[in-house]
Image 1 (cartoon, rainbow, N blue to C red):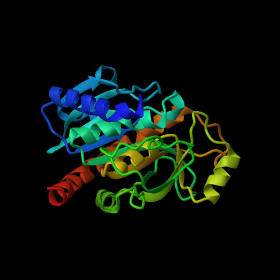
Image 2: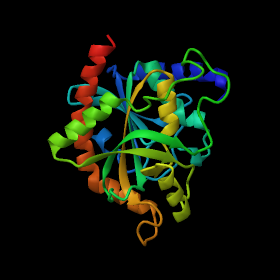
Image 3: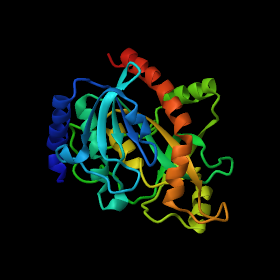
Image 4: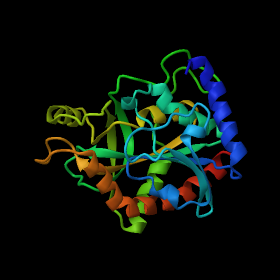
Amino acid sequence: MAMSDDYTQANSAAQFLLSKAKLRPKIAMVLGSGLGGLADELSEAFRIPYAQIPSFPHPTAIGHAGQMVIGKVGSVAVAAMQGRVHFYEGYSSREVAFPIRVFARMGIRAVVLTNAAGGINLDYQQGALVVISDHINLQGQNPLIGQNDDRFGTRYPDLTQAYWKPYREFALEEARKLGLTVYQGVYAAMTGPSFETPAEIRYLRTIGADLVGMSTISEVIAARHMGLRVLAISCVTNMAAGILDQILTHKEVLETGERVKGAFMALVKAVLPRIACDLESTMT
């Protein structure tokens, strides 16, 4: 996918989706490993595999269904990705971010990103939900590398508010109402697909990371490049290497995602109407 083609291809994919679905959502969701169940609960839902969407990358990772679902959570229209692609699957950072470009061309103005992550902060436990407050990009890639297309955004986008503070506050407030313990933390992204070593986890803790994963950051950078507001929530599906005396497996990631999906979905459902109201009041 050449940089000069990104805008045309994102526009083509967006128009394809809009031609198929009746709803016109302003909010998108990216549902990560083991967390795709929320998309199954959407009402008035239209579903289409990524493979049928022009230029759209499709995942190979277990736990990522690979379909777009456009429907409603309560009264809020959303476009939901059941699964995402990753850098470790052989996609470039720009290709990983392509679905976010498509969302923007569909008229999406806010994105809720979710992921499965390893817990580094010793205050966390397996199954904890963490609202991401900032990130550390250790993937050696950035989706904005190459010629900038001014139709997407400025050459040098500011990431001071990469994770939109009002939306983080919405999530924490709604978590309290639901009786959920939800943390805030800094997410570090590595390339994967191997899990990190204990030495790497000690390094990540030293530089200020609370969580580690293999996704999300390219999507966030692309979203902010285009002016989309971002809320990101991690599920701590395992404690990172060296914290517990046990082997890490992807099966554990999926099992923990399944165990906590009720709390996760309740939180997202509570936050979406507040994001929708915010968009109505600030972007009309």
